[in-house]
Length: 195
Image 1: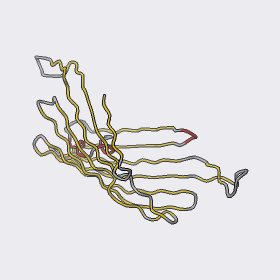
Image 2: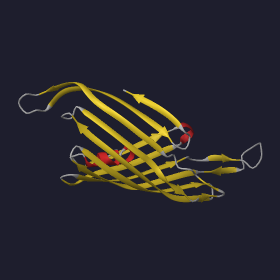
Image 3: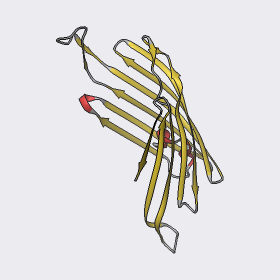
Image 4: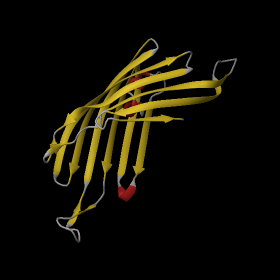
């Protein structure tokens, strides 16, 4: 279900329908909520739906240095749908998002699109994927539009050790190694991860 956030092509993987829920509490009371679901829509396709929200809680407002003059909140909402389709060993997918943000009395809305590809190769021994995220735009928030965090990600996962049951072919135990690279287009910043 969380493929809707990372790579929409993966919603096309055959499997059970899923629902996922997450709640994160950050520094100073910032909270993030996420709900995602994924449905198999045919032999070779899947549909995902999601909603995420972030709330700052009460923040101190100041007009001048000194005691606060009151409080305000910052909130964001992201609602979207993903569709993925399998074509041979390759899956392709896209996500459409509606985005809303509010800070104090100012608010803005916008849209974004993600597009991704995912492939499973060598009898499920290698997964590779790539996605471009957050291509879109926001309306002005008071005097300036928020720039979306456009990001390109690419990665792989392989299974160097896998023990398979000889009777039914099910996986008894396995270990995987993964690596990915992400490039934040707006900041022109590249990072890598491995596990």
